[in-house]
Length: 100
Image 1 (tube, rainbow, N blue to C red):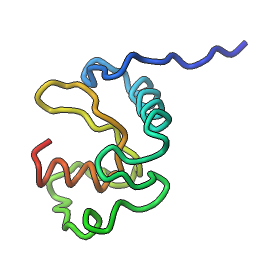
Image 2 (cartoon, rainbow, N blue to C red; image 1 turned 120 degrees about the vertical axis):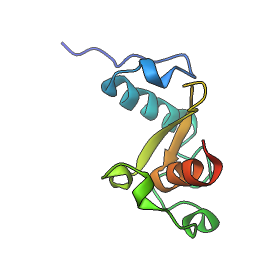
Image 3 (tube, rainbow, N blue to C red; image 1 turned 90 degrees about the horizontal axis):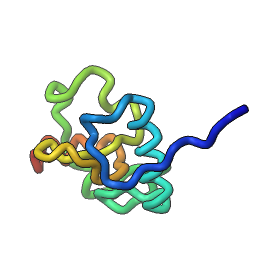
Image 4 (cartoon, rainbow, N blue to C red; image 1 turned 180 degrees about the horizontal axis):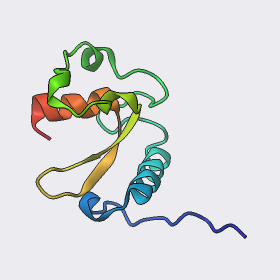
């Protein structure tokens, strides 16, 4: 017998989630956001908005493989609370340029 994946009352504390639950929360945000990136508003199945995509990313700031996963779960590094699903590039932009 299979059971439905749990749904979460968003936002949630990213630091308290297991890796499996992070994936579930990310998918829940994708659904809630109608498939659009929380940061740039472009569909997550496509590239980020052009002005965002053109921003240079210093890959040395991020763990190896950081940009290998196309959709990330954005969260506040101050509070730990989730904010939404974003393109990997948007996640890097948020960290590198906005310290988020």
